[in-house]
Length: 370
Image 1: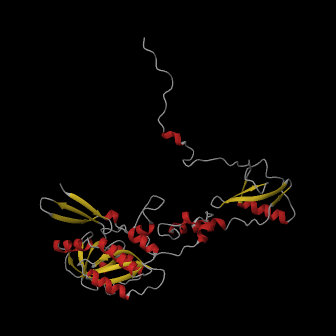
Image 2 (image 1 turned 120 degrees about the vertical axis):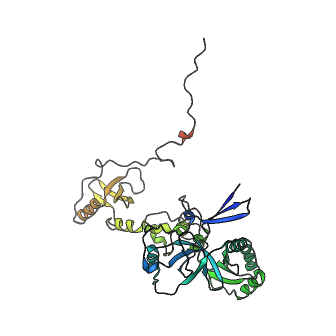
Image 3 (image 1 turned 180 degrees about the vertical axis):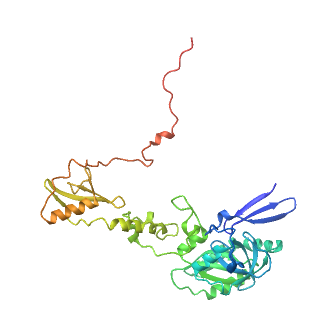
């Protein structure tokens, strides 16, 4: 019976045939991190006809020029040029969309690109898989060596080159790390060329991947390629609770999704007046208790220490009342219209009861047999 193994870190599916002993690899598009949907499939562009996007481990990608003379297409495993030796990657994008990705990164079609030598052979794939099998043990040993040398750094991932002659060690460090002696120890221990690449906490989360509290794949692993700065001001604008445990993502930093709705909140907040003093009515003073920013509704109460009876007012009406108070005019009252809003308990399920999961009890007694 054939055995199927999925490698999401590189987007491949391996099918092993026990009768022949051969293992075939194919491209699995669904688990490709930072995948681009090719909505221009079937359309040709002569300016980029020889340019292809090639993916390696996790989020590492690059644009390569096809110099093999072979017909390279989406999903092919190819041998590409590297700084030392050669590497093996998977073609993930072709056609006009490559030009759009190049424009996004500021790359011109006339620039120098590394070459695609040829399509990968079975021997190339076997050597590639042999190198991949060493990555986990190498990372564990590298972490142990760095800890024994007392270096303030964390090795997050290890990526072997397709020919097994070089490995990239991705590490995280708060400050500058002198790892010259560490590279010598790594070279003696693993007998390969060493490249150290520093990454941030968000980039590490994108490399490793995972599931967020929303139940979906992490945004940094799915589509974010450029990380923008995030501050607690984004949470304040949205009137969120400044709880570090809720605002932090799996990387330990503020969640990237905090920036998503900030422009909408800023636009709505621009139409909400600042209430620095209570509103004056003929029957007393009304104090601002809370604000619904997106609904542009402000809730006032005659008791500044209680939220028992809240009276909603539109932001435009509040601006008018403030203008009237400045002119010495007091409106009649908030009571009556609209009706006060009473705070009620709402369970985690919403309007439905949690008891709906219980089996319904039978009502009535069974009829006695005659």
